[in-house]
Each structure stands twice: as structure tokens, then as C-alpha cells.
Image (cartoon, rainbow, N blue to C red; front, side, top):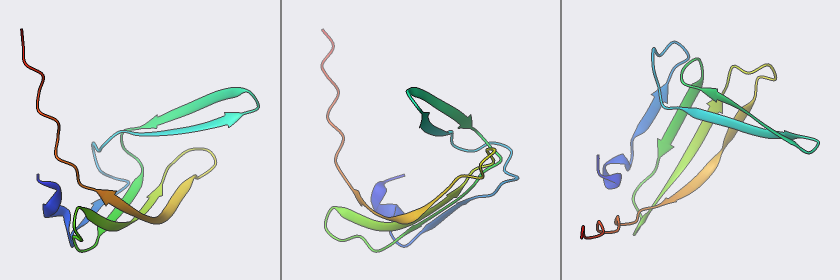
Length: 90
């Protein structure tokens, strides 16, 4: 999917989705770095606005099923970049 196709769209992942994109939740407890990985059992909603130049504004809501019921809510601006051409084999 071309990034421009996301303009004006919403993406939803429900908690009962059999498989979904991997989400890694990371945090620190003192000097120790911890992480938990989710491949399902979380809720995610992404709302994309109108394309403006090479940017798409959006809103995100993520709720995970960890012991602390972590969540993330906010707004963002995604920059659209053309991928670098592959390096020549040789």
C-alpha cells in the first residue's frame, strides 16, 4: 500500500483479532530495561488526516493487556519518504 493511500483512512485492531502487528512495550525499573511483546489481545486505532505535502497528520490510541493496563493516546505527523534504491549487487 502506498503511504498516500492512508490519507483520510482509519485502521482498527480489536482485542479479539487472531493475529495483528507486533507491539513491543518497553520500560525501565531502576537500571533494568524490561519489555513485553504483544501479537494480539490489544486494541489499536489509527486515524489519518488529509495529505499535506509529504506529511499525513494522525491520531493514535493503543491499549495493551499488560498487568498495568498501559495505554497510549495522542497525535502525530507522519513524514512520507521515498525508499532508497537498493544497493547494486556486485
